[in-house]
View (cartoon, helix red, strand yellow):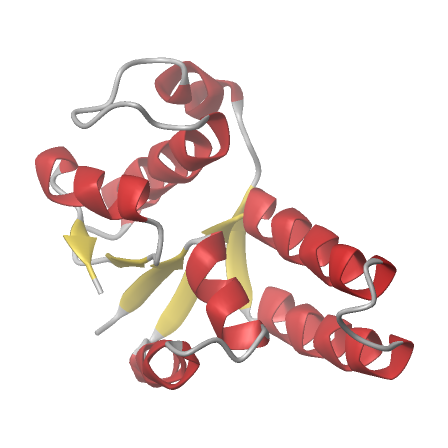
Length: 140
């Protein structure tokens, strides 16, 4: 697999060692390189903050996860939420309903797919996954 769009749900599964973490880690390691929305880094950062604020993790664990996230972000081609992405995210998707943040991920993946036609999308979110094939995107 060459290019891999990493959607937030998959990154969080990996970061927080959820049941699918090993599978996600394998897919991440097999990719030539990672692409993502800047939204992915923001959402992951907020989840770390929430985990610490609610007592699910101690400060040391939060710092460790921030380091992993920072290393991921450095090695990832990130796309900001451009006017074109906002316009596409505001339009209907083949399988509705789609939440706003998921729409941003789908619109960003569509933009990246123009650059990388063989790109696959790694997501653990049902609403995102259900829209991939109808949009001409490939699931990882």
